[in-house]
View 1: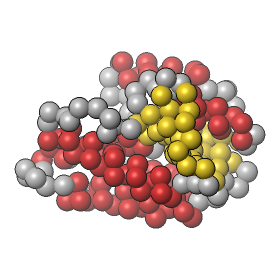
View 2 (view 1 turned 60 degrees about the vertical axis):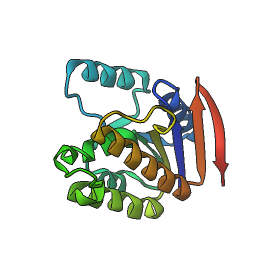
View 3 (view 1 turned 120 degrees about the vertical axis):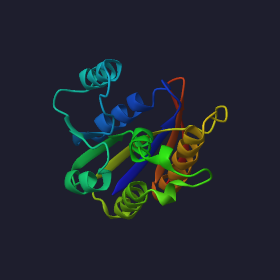
View 4 (view 1 turned 180 degrees about the vertical axis):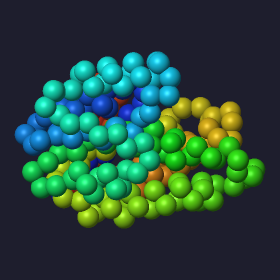
Amino acid sequence: MTCELILGGARSGKSREAERRAEESGLAVTVIATAEALDEEMAARIRRHQADRPAAWRTVEAPVALADTLRREAAPGRCVVVDCLSLWVSNLLVDADHLPPGAGAEELPLFRRERDALLATLPTLRGHIILVANEVGLGLVPETPLGRLFRDEAGRLNQVVAALCSRVVFVAAGLPLVLKQG
């Protein structure tokens, strides 16, 4: 298996880089989308992303059950793009506003179960896997406890996933910078 992590800020070009890498693979491509169209603006963003992709690429939605979806979709001779891990973390923190002050995401059964499943599944997958995630640690400290929890958990996940991947790229202003090439 080949596993890549592509990190970047908002509108940095990370999805475009993932799509470029998927196309270069020459393999059949499946995009696992983690976003949910909860309002018209997000629905429009999703439609734009879909329109930018080649017509032959399949799209599978997995706002929560990412590990299960990866196990179904990853296979030799296939490329799977997950766009994106950050939205997925956000989806898993849906009940976090009910946590007591100072509590962490470990106390959320859904978050813990799905994150652990993803981390256990990644090393077992076959095919070419490309994961997209926001690098959220370069900005200001979020004002709210939920914002800080999201930033912390997204950052922790990025670190562990980067350790599992053989290639890690940071994208800024549409320019890829290879951080790890294994």
